[in-house]
Amino acid sequence: MLNAIRKNGAILAVFACASTGLVALTHYLTKDQIHEQEQAQLLSVLNQVIPHDLHDNDLYQACTLVSDPLLGSDTAMPVYMASINGEPSALAIEAIAPDGYNGAIKLIVGIRQDGTVLGSRILSHQETPGLGDKIDLRVTDWILGFNGKTLTDDNQSTWKVRKDGGQFDQFTGATITPRAVVKAVKNTVQFVNSHRTTILSQPLNCGGNHE
Image (cartoon, rainbow, N blue to C red; front, side, top):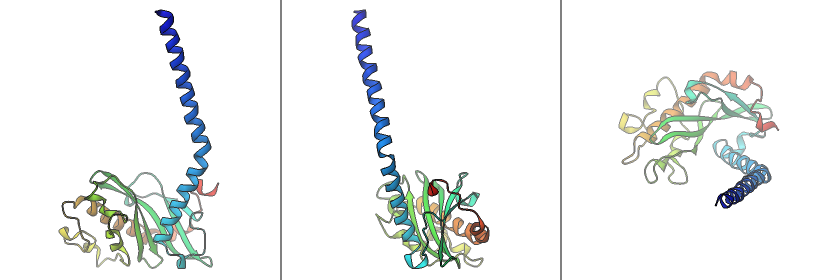
């Protein structure tokens, strides 16, 4: 009996080692492909929030890191700097809405040099399907409501959902999610408006984007 237990244990150990090795080998062989897919996906989103006619540089490479409570995270967030003939034209900045209904919502906002919002997209979320997930462009076009908006001292009070007296629609049965996104986009625009010069003077330091 004891010998059988030892034999079975040895077989299980061999299978466990083989499985671990296979997972490690698969990761090694596919990591470059995964990285390329992630880069292609990010480039697609960047070109949505900053149109092609507003940049002639490589947005993915023109990246710097910034930190501020307005961006909703203690982690430094990437900013992609668009330019035409070497002159700054727009920024695309990632941010977090920490107060989504089911947790943090990651988004990106494209902002023209004059402060106009070019576009915004949700990068990741865990909101409820059929309710909060309407922030995702694949579900509804709600996120396009930020296009062309500006944030000024005179209109700050309108950067809320309609239920709170603002200009942005909420969803039937789901107000927390759009409220969180509106607040995050507003805070992101406010950060850029206050720190644009500093951002543009920073070195390109996103690390992985310059391998």
